[in-house]
Length: 100
Image (cartoon, rainbow, N blue to C red):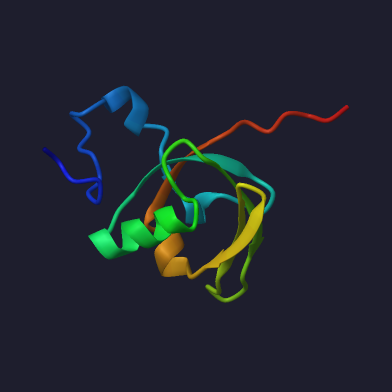
């Protein structure tokens, strides 16, 4: 049985892996759905405790200047993640819909 802390290989499901990007790739205001996190058990568990689990929508509120922290919204709560941690969270970007 494979642990939840490792990135799935492309052979697991190549169709779903091609549109996955790092959270750091999203711009302010963009929304993505968490696909998986890469890291040790402690990091993955901590992210899960903060609500960053597969299938959850994440909105980038603010990208800190000079490689500073990312401010995101998850489940209605604003969180700050360091850029290193944010780069280990992989999401599927959602298309922005025009509002009127």
